[in-house]
Length: 264
Image (tube, rainbow, N blue to C red):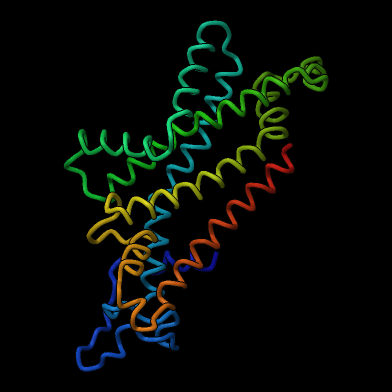
């Protein structure tokens, strides 16, 4: 949480401290001036990490909102659909969910490269994550549809109708808020962890962040592909970003399990 808040106070431009006359400035060990040390270019590792977190938040924020809201409203719509239209959407969503994650991401990337080739790297990644958010929300919508349909048959819903409560109040207060919110939170947390994994993987494979777009994936790519990071006893620079990222994913997955356990 401290790193996330701190990332908003960091300039997006990396300040280099490289000095050719002093080799120790590169791959410097942690100190008061550089809490996480410096890398082979003389960049402050903590600054690099904070900029990466800030960029990832910008890339993910709208996608997370789209995922949760799209999943919610599609789930509501599916719960009220009957007959042929329900079967069509069922077949469509099942088809989407059957596509492997890697193939789905590559398909979206190909489409973006074909229609939005003039976009810079950041806008392409931003568009990728937002399109993926809407597409992957189909899984959440199917889960919510089942919970909404099950809850609508409960006795307290009939009691609420008898008391004269409007359908909108019953839907959002008694069905969505009390019986679906934990499921939405759990799936959203899992989605954030998934986005982070996708961004790191794409960047590592030269399909994601490039040039001056600095992300968490950029750190993995630079430090894990740097021979100096392993041959000059500078494992610190590889371990720190890896530990922080993996710990963040661990927290998200554990939070997801906790919410799902409470939900079911």
